[in-house]
Each structure stands twice: as structure tokens, then as C-alpha cells.
Length: 175
Image 1 (tube, rainbow, N blue to C red):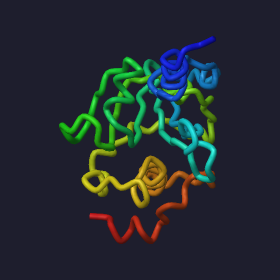
Image 2 (tube, rainbow, N blue to C red):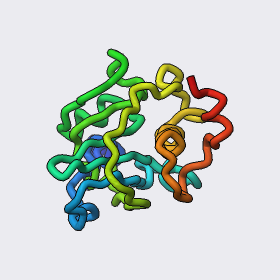
Image 3 (cartoon, rainbow, N blue to C red):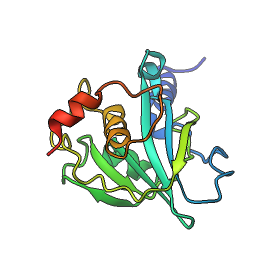
């Protein structure tokens, strides 16, 4: 018979997102020339089963190295053993715009990433993201950030997670 402590320990390990698979996939291996990529994956746990429960990010490859742009928190980047190249705030866990060297082809905490679109390489300047100081899961999240970049750089694509904020919204907030 298994005692209660073992059952609780196994359940906690199973439900802790920090222990989920973040191994590298081959999804970006075919990209050999500079590119800007839009990626998505189901969010961890129950949230990933809900409609719209996606984590979305942008990755750029300048021909030499990858750089990842996303709205997340520092802890997720730390768990992936990545170096933060830019973060606006000192708050450790608050969601914010983070630019890092994390491998953009890695599983998103147990869920395989999907390459949604590939565009020509652009050295993104996203540090003027107007909602960076107002992170809210309902109105400003990783998909909102991706829609901002698509609007700002006029990427012509219908992406499955863009739509939280449309062109009129970004034009109104353009400073």
C-alpha cells in the first residue's frame, strides 16, 4: 500500500509546471537564414485546454543567434535557464515584456510549440510597448503583445491568436 505522503508528493510533482518538459524541439531547425517567427503553444495545465489558452511569442534569428520576445514572468525564464536580455521591471514574478536568449523552439512547459508564421528578419525594437506597465491577463497578455508587434511592423498575416487588440486599438495608443 502507498502511504498518503507518497501520493501527495507525486501529485504535487505532476502538477508543478516547473517540472514540465521544456526540452528543445526541431521546429525551427529548417530555418537557416535570418527570419522573424511567430510561435504559439498551449498554456500549461487546464488553461491550455481552454479556447484561447495559448502562450505566444516572437523569435528572431539574425543568422547567428536566436532572440525570444514575450510577455511572461522572470521565473519562467529562470526555469528554462535562459539569460534575460531585457526586462522593464524589477518585480520577479509580475508578467512583463521580456527579451531573452531562451531557445524559442523549446516545449512550452510540456506543450510542443507551433510555428505559425515566418517573415523576413527584422531587428525588433519593442521597448516602447505601450502596455508594458499595465499587464492584465484579460486585456494585456502575450497575445496582445504579439498583436502589437504584428501591427507595428505591418506583418501581413492572419494569426490564430491575434485579435485581442486590433489595428484601431493600436493606432489609438500610438504615441
